[in-house]
Length: 93
Image (cartoon, rainbow, N blue to C red):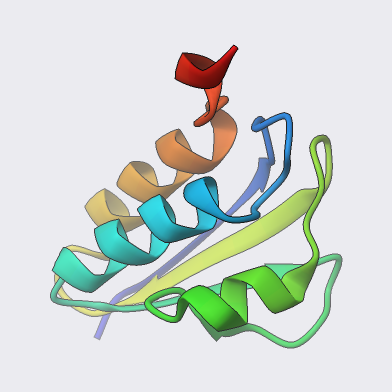
């Protein structure tokens, strides 16, 4: 089983809260791999769980580690990293 990890910087103005966290959880739910997110070396949480992502308390500029296990782990990490690095609330500006 392949595993891939990447450290990414949270780009959303509000961090991984509300809408950005929901979008990340929804994207993770579409994937056929196990995906976890951890903040600052803390315990990883299930990326499919909105409440778990919110509990991370990740703010703009914080580093989080995205890890995926399974066939297609590289693509899964790439997809979630793109979401996390973007300002997902840019439409609300």
